[in-house]
Image (tube, rainbow, N blue to C red; front, side, top):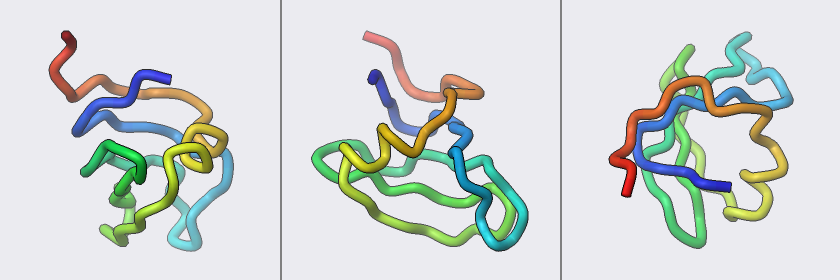
Length: 64
């Protein structure tokens, strides 16, 4: 899965604040995400993040 900085993604599970949208802040072996609803930040392994992502809503990163 192609993930870039500042992409907005929709996750399968709803965050406790009620939002499904997250922004990608860091890409590598771990993915850092910020909730679009409350601003909570999490860092999870890339493999787990790729399974949790339902779709990429908006491309924000630079495409190369």
